[in-house]
Image (cartoon, rainbow, N blue to C red; front, side, top):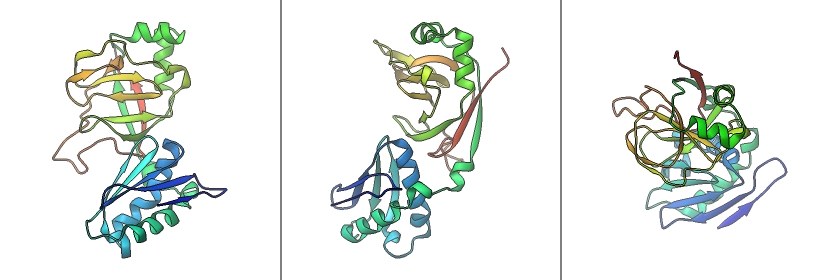
Length: 223
């Protein structure tokens, strides 16, 4: 539909997704979160064409803008691109949310992660707890969040053979991301610890503990 770039804003490419959604492509997860921080309050206020926006779904390099079937997508597209141009300067209350999560660093892959990174197990723990992570986007199960911004020394590949059962609360690493399994499921992440935190509660508002933009700090639980 349209492309836009300015000196102070991320590059943007807007594509139609069916007859009731737009997909905004941008540079990286930081740009996605910046754009989402601009669009979210507009959609919540619901003035003008923003009243037709039902949802915003961030991903690694895209933001899906879900609208209603009667929406004029050309008009909405112009509004989305125009608002997103100020994303580089945006700050929202989401940036102020900090969630602390206590972790027992008892994961079955902690030793392997140490070998892969050239660190000791204690150094892996120190780097995992020593960096403020940020929720980039949701994942494969309700409550699962891809956390970004961690120590680059902790970048490791997924396991060659995924496990058929990963317990709820398992804390893992995969690529540049860290994450916590909200429920028991198969998975191929490198498991370094576990936590008792409840990531998804249908009776909570919002149900997900970790929403995009939230800062997460891991702390080592008493052994």
